[in-house]
Structure formats: C-alpha cells, structure tokens
Length: 327
Image (cartoon, rainbow, N blue to C red; front, side, top):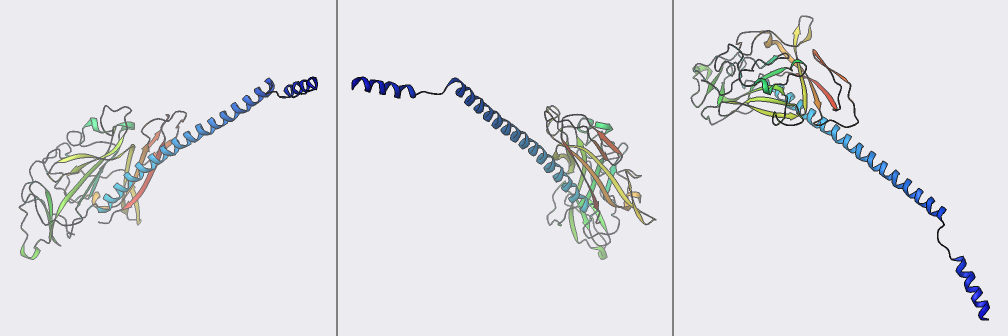
C-alpha cells in the first residue's frame, strides 16, 4: 500500500509544471506588443492635443484682434451730435507726450485733426520719430501697414478733467479742446455735450513683451490717446505677424474700389480722398508663439498688395474681413 501511494504521489507531482520557455517568450512578446501599441496611441493623442492647442491659440488671437479692429472701425469718424466739419481749436492744445507726428508736423496737429476719421500708411511707418520708434515696428517683408482711427467716446462726459482732450459737440458745430475750459459757441449753437476724444494708431510690433524675448513673438499693438493727454502703446493681441489694410472709395461706376492708401497726410485738415472712404478691408496673419517639431509650413499668404511665402515650422492662420464705416 505504501509503495502504491508513493507512486501515485510521484505521478501527481510530475503533472504539476509551470510555463515552458516557449510559452514565456510568447507571453512576453504579446505584452511588449500591447505596451508598444498603447504608447503609440498615447503619443498620437499627445501630438493631436498639442496641434489642437496650437490651432486654438491661432483662432483665439486672430479673432480677438479682428474683432477689436472691427469694433473701432465702426466708430471711426463718430463726432457725437456734430455732422458738420469740426472747427480747428481756438485755444492751442499744447504739446502732448509721445504724440504721433509725421515729419514736418507740429505739436497737436495730429490730435486736433478730427476731420479724418480714418487714415493709413501703406507698408511704412510715418511715426518713427516719436510714437512708433523703429525698434517697435516690424519690418518683416518690408514692413506692414499703419492704421489711424479717430472718434469720440460713445457717452458724453459730465465732468471735465485737466489735460484730457475733449470734443465739444452741437448739431452744426464741433471743436476739440483740452482740459476744463471748453470753447464758447454762438447762442444758436449752444453745445449739447462734451465727449472724450479717442485716437488709436495700429501697427505690428516684432515682439509681444520685450525686444529681448526668445523667440520673438510678433503682436498687434496700438498707440492710444490717454486721459492725461499723452499717447502710449497698448498690446491688442499677441501672435499677430502681418497686418494689411485697403480703403474702399465709391467711384462713378457706381462701384467701391479698394486702394492700398490714399493721398494726404495724417494732419491734413482740408478735404481729401480720405473723406470718401466708406469701407475698410483688413488682413491679419496669426502665428504660433513657438515652432512645432515635425511640422513644415511652406504656404503663401496673399494680403492686399503683399504676399508672404514661408518655409519654417510655425503654424499660421489668415483672417480677413470688410468693415463698412457708419459715420
């Protein structure tokens, strides 16, 4: 009996065996393949997420910049209650800190030119001596357009403050002044309201925060008239690389024809082609802040009288619109 029991135990023990070497290798191979597939899926998901983030960055910056320009352009030339051409200031405005002045212009000529609701320079910077120094102006491809928009605030003010530039408005008269002592109108043209003056000068800067940032991230900037009577720069949207503008004028066709620029300086208070601008066509080219490894951009972007052809690793998105002027 003991002998038979020993034999039975040995037989049972002989049948209790683990994985063979071949089985182990097959299991490891399958496991490695599954892990490799999972890693590929995760890598592709990460790449797709980064691409989506970069696209969202382009769309956000471009749309914000375009909407900001569209909003201000619709107000261009707004003079409160005044429909007649504004009068020149009867009292000198005095010098304004960092006023945008073309070569040959004198102090306050630019700010006091309320007649021009809109003005622009084509692929050049006429204000390099003051409000837009050369170091702040992007010269990629020869330089981009500079756009000037003038209007008054939506709501009249009830309290005048020193140094602020205002527009005193009645139905048939209007005049710019500065500070708390406004002009006197004839009795039949008693002023209805005083509005704070708004003046913006848009351009492309080669950097967003500082000229020493790396990499340089271009941005849409504007020089804005401040409440203290000075003009200072403000960033509108980062990542905007190019800016082109065309101006629509009604011809005898009748038809609206678009021009890259029109005759007349930014301080011209006489009748000019700028009085006839009824619409503005805008192009903005948005660019990612950093290059994308593995992505090659060889596209060409047509904007007004300029075409930009690139060969780098930055994603870009072109935005354009036509804005009808209301005033």
